Image: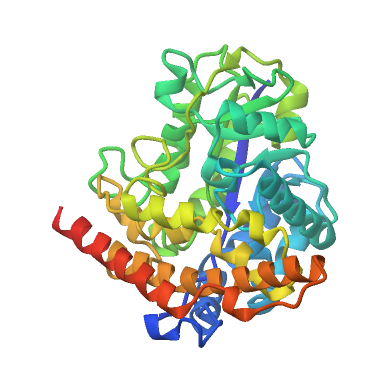
Length: 435
């Protein structure tokens, strides 16, 4: 029996407030509480609440034959608790049906897998614990931030005990092979891989409302016909997308909700496909072959690589400076510092600094609080400068106490050092703009 595996990414970052150079050393409040609440409520009303209601309706209508999966970042879950308890309750009702699988990921929707195995595992542990506490489910399948994957990352995921992982069916990795099979990691062969069918996924997620698209309007009949055209030996169609596809990226006026409402019936009546969760796919199908991925891939942009987050000097500078703090962070036992450390790792901060604008450039602009990537860089680096001061002070204090010494605040990073650092960054920024 052929399978459709629907997976939805649910994530909201904590956006930074406008943080000036003169705030450094004076204010340690980095996040825009008002804007974060405003956006969460906006997306809740347009997407989360109506889409969860629809998904519950479909599950109840088809008696458990309709199944889906979610990966919800820790920052999204925390904001549900803070700003949208009604959304949290609607996800809990879905969890109670037994037709929804919840996947593991990093708490912060971060890029930590690229820098530190220990930090990566720590964040996954936080997200998994939240998923267990809020939804009563222990994840068995892993989904990394933005489907980022490589052989090295698969090894870390396998070492954490996961049986499968989701990633992108990138053409430059698959070559002539189809994404419509179950695969395995070449470096950890017991870890199964579910690969996104990006064509059929993006037909819904990105092209649905595009009137210039030659296939517009997309109907359920047309979509199921495409499914039926898949070779009979190809077993699995993985439809992976942002949950905000429904009602936010594709507004209700486009007909996206009606399309989703009618799709299961069209599938059941006119195809041999069944809806399965990732775990069911892994249990019911045999792997086709190992996949070797030396350099990380993702589901972003045409290149399916990391350049949306680490594609220019600003992003690299901010990313490297942040993770230079890892050794000092390990010495810190301050809940507020660790909270900020988690939130500053969110990949969106680096995404806002992206300077490439190809055919999907509007994706980079969506919910971007900055007018330019350069503004995003300066704002983030101002925050990071203050955060570095706090971390160094706390780490030095821990070292001093550990050695039975009295802590001397003069050992911490001085304001003059910070001014020199910001001046250097501003000169770098000017040169990047002129390049």
